[in-house]
Amino acid sequence: MESSRPILVPGYEPSFQPDQQNGRTEKLWLLWRERRFLWRILWMAALASTIVAFLIPRRYESTARLVPGETSSSSMGAALMSRVAGAAGGSGAGAAGLGLDAAGFLGLKTPGAFYIEVLRSRTVQDQLINKFDLRTHYSKKYYRDTRKKLDRYTDIQEDKKSGVITLTVTDTDKNLAATMVRAYVDEMNRVAAGLNTSAAHREREFLEQRLKTAKQDLDDAVMRMSQFSSKHTMMDVQQQGKAMMEAAAKLQGELIASESELKGLQQIYSDDNVRVKSMKARVGELKTQLTRMVGDYTEPNAAAEESQVAGSYPSIRTLPALGYSYAELYRQSKIQESVFDFLTHQYEMARIQEAKELPVVRVMDEGDIPEKKASPHRSLIIALSVLAALVLGCVWVIEKENWNQLPTDDSHRLLASEVEGELKSFLRKVRGNRIR
Image (tube, rainbow, N blue to C red; front, side, top):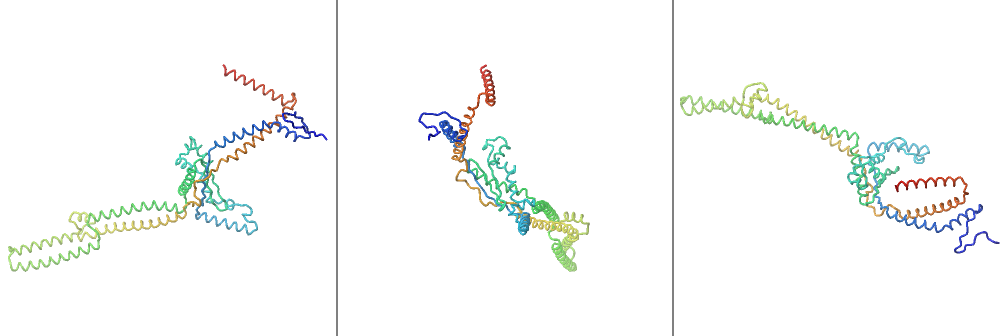
């Protein structure tokens, strides 16, 4: 039995005969006939894809894994979600089994979502752009274009079950990629701390301002008291009054003794005697000192002026009037000191509470320097490029043969001829204008 398949003879290229029953075989035969054309496409595509693959710069990925810190509000939300999940599990269809997210179902804000939005914020991105001069690194002129490229090279993912945030930065410089990941975490913590609006934070801010005012009031009260004490030579009213009374009593005793001795001398000697004159002078001096120490009763303001002018120490009669002013200043200073101590204690407690509620991310895996490149995958690029070129070449060969088999009066060929004529005419006009 003779076979209908053509005999392959070296150097012999049989003409293609369309056969409706053996369409697949005819296409394979057509591709075999155009094997030289397909081979040229194959090696040209391999060469071009190899050049392109090696021109693409290497990119490295640095990854950090973050664990959001839990605050009191997030703990309450977690407890509520667990109770909802437990209730759903008790009914026979758990939330996990149904694929439901309890936080999203209840409309609760999870810490991870907050930190992701902070990482993607314009504030954090601009800080990184300025810190690493990314506009020059990315060859961009405007911040907007630089942010888009930075966002394209930054990948942020959150595991809904564990809440762990995965932050990945891709760059051509492995050291820069690792440094940018760490800077992302630092800037995120800084911005999150600035956005802290908890009750402890507001209380700490209020106490901080109130503490400054109390410190100023205390300094003013102590300064007024010290100036008053220095001006009127008063340290402690009670102790000073007791000492002055003892000194006055001692002077009074010496005066009585001197007067008695003077009377005895006057009975023996005349007034011109030296001893009598000396004793009279001593009695006069003691009376002067006693009068100055005891003083006269005056109004409080006059007493203050008298104590300032009369001598270094206030008199006994003016001491109670000055003691009232001193006691008032002392009382104000003690009140301000008590207020300052109380506010200081409250301020430290508020700082401790704020530190507990401060949203800080704990780094589980720090961004390290990558050892291997993440992209490009050159072998994959070359293989896919060669495969795509081969497929396109086969399609071209088959469609070209189908086109050649169309009759000359076919509408598609007539349309193509007309379009070709118009294009040639347009190109001739353009060429002629250039020559002119």
